[in-house]
Length: 249
Ligand SMILES: O=C1O[C@H](COP(=O)(O)O)[C@@H](O)[C@H](O)[C@H]1O
Image (cartoon, rainbow, N blue to C red; front, top):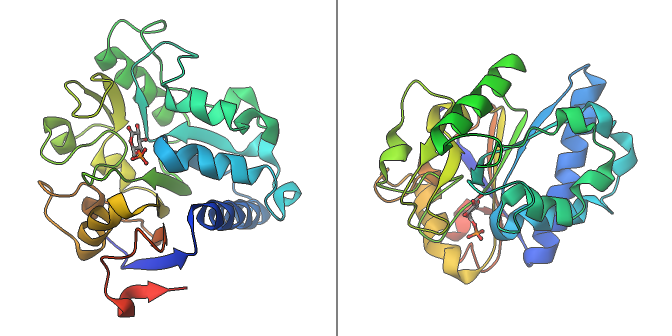
């Protein structure tokens, strides 16, 4: 845990998605200026597709060489390629592939059509991360569930406690579908920048717990910090449980 978290509040979900997309573009462009070939981890859920959709029209979009950006996911529902409930399918439908990415650098979590089990999928995904240099992300984008989960690591679930692993199989997920693959806390915590994207009043408690550093049984989000930056990018409704002196606008 290396950085203090900052909270940035946006007017509503759309402004949050648009501002986060602009922030991502600026961060990637700056990394490329330094000669980096950046790695970004995307998220599923309500904000996952919102930021991808906003990237289509984000200011400065063309300053990024998207063909040299590597894309990963923090978690995936263990379903076949193209299943509408997969996070990557939802991001694809939001326009991910219209950005000009190199398909070789879009690293999808294998589903049951490409692996024999969620365990094997996690191993294959971890191997792909190791082959790419070890699973250190420039930007880790995370949604947060109302129960405080990030990726597919649910508070109190055994997968949350996985050690010495990059990725882990998750069974009996409290949120459907039951079988998933997730990056581990150890891996999430090797990201330069961690950005939590959260909108909606049903998430106000999860945001408060995450920002205030609640225990693992209550909040997985609270266990994740970026090496260089930890940002809670939220809308006004999701920020409702926080003291005013924690907020930036
Ligand atoms: O199932 C998932 O849920 C979380 C949060 O989703 P939301 O719809 O409550 O915003 C998401 O971040 C994760 O990637 C996904 O698999």
